[in-house]
Length: 320
Length: 284
Image 1 (cartoon, one colour):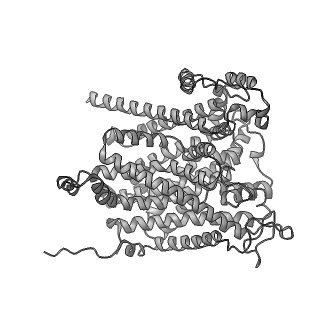
Image 2 (cartoon, one colour):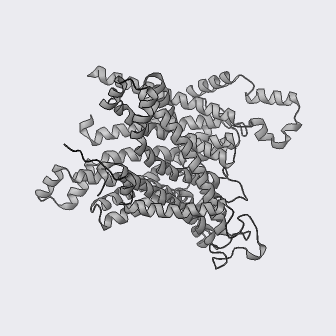
Image 3 (cartoon, helix red, strand yellow):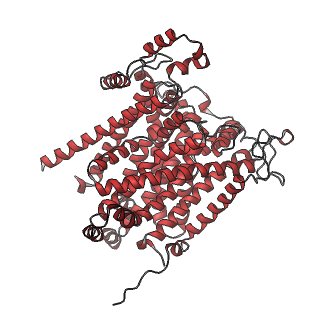
């Protein structure tokens, strides 16, 4: 038995490592295919005025004169040993950049997931109490619109109404870390968390709804109702606990996407998170920044998947 | 014994589902709008500026109002819908054809091909699609064709995943095995026996992917990485409306509603297709 588990674990580790390796190669290649490099992006139109000697010196300064394979291996060696490289333009180590931006993204993803899961699960329960009935109809409409209203439309609406009509827009101030000014930080997190929370709620609601409907028809639920257990208790204890697994999976997936995929919302609400760091990096051809940041997002993604697995085992003893 | 054959085509069942009917109606209206824009038959030129009609609210002349340059928002929305649909149709065509072929081949042949195909799709799944699309768009360029290719590449693994699984189980079925025993050529088994059986899943996925592609395309152009001004694109219009919406709500309403309706209709069509193509879910 032990051997079975360890071999499965080993194959999991191998597959995760190959995936991460694939991502690093892919990002490296895509970045090199993008026209322009660090020199053209910092000098712009003036690049053509540089003498060949200057360009050569700059290339060697930026480390982009070496063969591609060597550049890749250098970056990989640095990454594995904890040296994420430097941002060309500012000379800041990517480790420092990430130490600043990762917590922002994590906080946002956490708030958004809490809102999304609560809203989605409640709407799912609400819909599932009357499959095909009126409540289900309203629940489904909510789910459809939460899915269909793009986050940037909702954000734009909020910005327009809140900032321009009521002159309240905490995101207009410079970003404040939670330990600097907690109240301002929470206000700055509020709008983006609501926007992303609604986006997360849609798939969670759909998953929760079908999972509830399936569990409700099981024998143990009928038995519980037959025994005269309070209907609310059946719904929130018996049914909810037994339909948690798909909801946890969906939340894990959504949380993972929030870590890097919140680019647009981070941009609108000027939150200096991972998404924006990567977007800026792509625009400025900051090879090291983009490569390392994308790897960090991908690794967090993998870690979240593992955590989801662990939560499963906690919820459902049958999987242990 | 006489076996009763199923004679009704699948679209008979499609029109049994209310979702499907509503979806197809909205989608047809949007497509007509896109065709109108395609043949330059919009009421006004989408890029023509009119200084005399800046930021006019909706009226008989401009049913969706005008923007900060006096351009007719209705015409711009139609033109934007045309662009969005063109990008999403092309990108999903790329993704569905490449993805299903890879998925079917990977699932059927197994071995190294399968390993490569699944590993590649794992790579794509391990980080957000929008980041991937961003990176690819910035390496290709900003034309609608580049955007379509980028989104197509990003969505290919989804089709690999939905086709590979069913093929893995289908290839062990008796009729495929007997086909092999009878000496049918591999292409014949692949295209005549396996592909038709995964088509329903692919069709549903196409409808859903079209809606995601519209969202991704408008997201990219919102960030300034898709269609460039002064051309009309729904994402770009929303982005321009950011500064205007407080006193000119119609600048935001037009493009947003078009986007929402497009996504809603495609999701409804997807639901309708799923119900009508899956015999176990048919309500007769």
